[in-house]
Length: 111
Ligand SMILES: [Zn+2]
Image 1: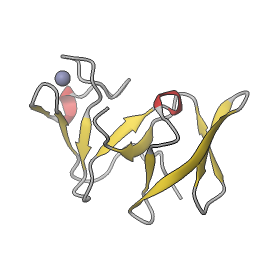
Image 2 (image 1 turned 60 degrees about the vertical axis):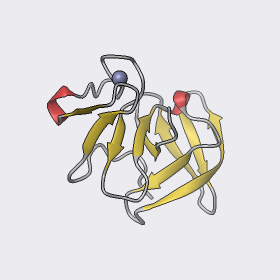
Image 3 (image 1 turned 90 degrees about the vertical axis):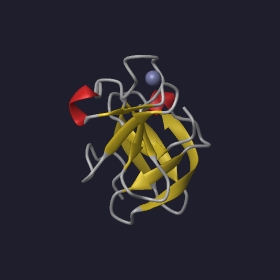
Image 4 (image 1 turned 180 degrees about the vertical axis):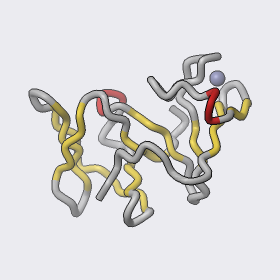
């Protein structure tokens, strides 16, 4: 399982709040937020649901993560905060360690 991929082919970016589409070069990848309004950028990778890139600290146990390998969303069992990183517990998988500065591909949920 890989939930922290930095890029998928043919990503399309938009801000739902500003109703604007953005080019790759216009997206702030330091925080994956819209420079205009500060809301999270919605990422269309051609899957049925759109993605949002969240830091572990921005995630909740109600988020679903997108696995690059299975190309599916997976529900969470919970998130553990460790000393140096986070442990993202995915249902039917073991915990996945993620650094606090690493973005996780989650299901777009109007963030
Ligand atoms: Zn915006």
